[in-house]
Length: 319
Image (cartoon, rainbow, N blue to C red; front, side, top):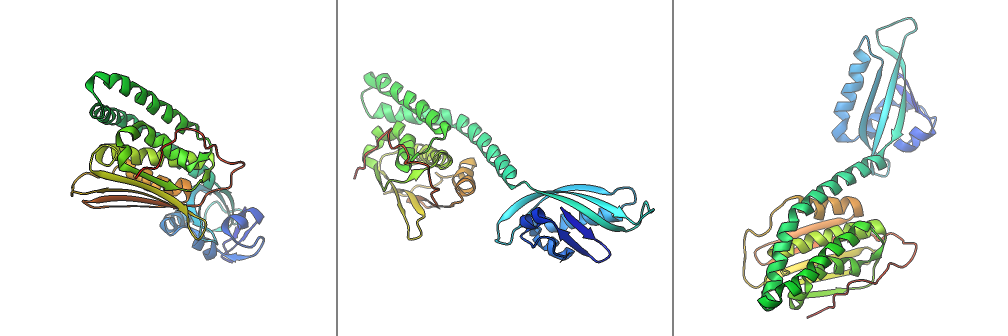
């Protein structure tokens, strides 16, 4: 709660409000100090709303939601309900004071944003099923005789469905297993085009699920445009801890002959960049030209209760 004195143009936060804004509790603070904590993109709108409320003759309560920049630079979301108190006996005119109840809703906002991404990811994957199945069918068909096509194709479709089910559970696992799950439906036909190198990295459930989505998107794009769907290309996946203990991962595809117009920005780009950044607090980057495509991701591994399950699909390193 924050008590505002308009005559003195100051405010006094209680312990909870002070913690949210990164200020000292029960200390008299200039109103401009609070305004300075509002996110720059929200400041003008919030100040205008409050000014309109103060100027109104028949309204004394307002509710609003906005971002703040905490003392450590973190961006957080707050919801506030502000009640004005005018001079005793006056129904209009300038207010004497106000009380603002403030609530930190950052986690709720993050959950809502994650939910929106997951819904769009579901739609995105649904639209991709036909393209993936078609590409997988072509790969399997050309990898053997037509007479054995169904015999070779059906197990891979079952494997693809099972892998998507494993991803959806969000269980903790080793980074290598998360990669194996994404690659295994396509790997036999592309075995000689793939090299994998990395140390054991135990991931918690949320990180496993996020990386599974990232690897699924990278594998899907590679089947459509790259090393998992075309001959003459090379895929290299590497990861290691850097000098700060962060995981530095790279997915690199190279070709011998130039190609143009193969990569397009879309929702898949949001998964690889925006969602990976938000869900892993990571630093993703994509670069590509006519001869290569490279996706890099740097993130911190959270401590897990136990060692991640390393069982499951195994894709051996080749090359």
